[in-house]
Amino acid sequence: MSDQFFFTGLSEELAVCARCGYCLSVCPTYQGVGWESASPRARIRLADQLHTDGQHGADTLGMLRLYQCTLCSRCTQVCPLGIDLRQVWLAARQEATSYDVAPAELKQMWQAISTQSNVFDLPNEERSEWLLYMDDAPEDIDQREQAEVIYFVGCVSSFSPAAQPITEAFTRVMAAAKLDFAIMGEAERCCGYPLIAAGMTAEAEMLRQHNVAAVRAMDAQMVVFNCPSCALTWQEFYAPDLPGIQFRHAVELLADLIKSGRLTLDEQSLTVTYHDPCDLGRNSQVYDAPRRVLTAIPGLRLVEALENRDRGLCCGGGGDLEMTYPALAAHVAARALNTLTVPGVEAIVTACPQCVRMFQSAAEDEGKPVEVLDVVQIIDRALT
Image 1 (spheres, rainbow, N blue to C red):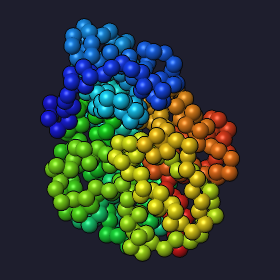
Image 2: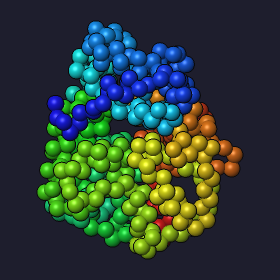
Image 3: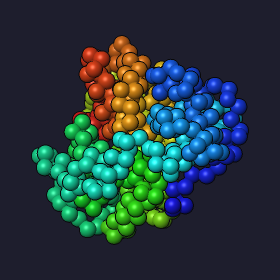
Image 4: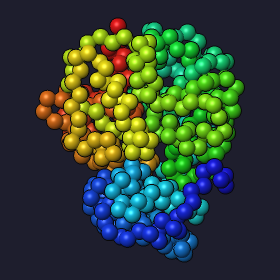
């Protein structure tokens, strides 16, 4: 197993936990289930048993509860002892997977990635087919051998019909700013986040090595992402092998482009609330850039959500939860949507394609007449 992905310190973290229960009040999946056995405190006990006694320390059903978690880090945020619980969950899943007890859905996900290089189990040569639906697609951005900026599109933004409008919008915005950019097309493979979240770290290493080599070959100065999970994965696991290359989320790049005057924006008469994605906010500490982008749009009114920044609500779509417990993921999304939907707000704006997918589905299921958009879509609308 590669040291690149090995999560350490589990014994120390488990020993420190006081079992105080502060994490229960903020855990979105515990609030969705309501059983102590599904709480972070119970998962700590389970991880401790598993780490101490191996596969005999917890039954298979118990170990599966380790996956009833979105890895949102809300528990880490409130832990009075400062335990990095996200790292605990990742390490515990890594141990559980070593005993071959990962949920069947995650094993199927690995089969899809191993054969097609993406979580959607679609031919990887179709990664850039979203370009065919753009009337104003930049010429040959999927054929360029070199570029200053590589747009790493990611699996969701490449293949999900709900996310592809975000991909198209970001492409138009970068073209409007006259960036020298390209996408890797079928040379791009899954970033590895779903496998890391599943505890399948050795499998993720193969993807990392391929993507690192592909970026090196293009002699890029920056890799940009509109998916926070892709961005976080590259920052945590790719950066050491790509010195001198910047890794930026789309909102960080947009904030710079607006500040430098490379994007000129028209008025947008719209009242919005901004949702902080977990992997962009708590897990990457990017809070100001999306707000600077939104408040730079003339006529747009930003109303802060009741729970924002480091207290932002999880959409339910992280940590592979949508694959393993889709009903629970939908419940988490609906709870968050109901909190974000307040009188006077016309649109919920976020900065994550998975959050957009989850909230759009929840809005349809809940009958909420609220628009759900990505920040890049708002900027695309505002382009002069």
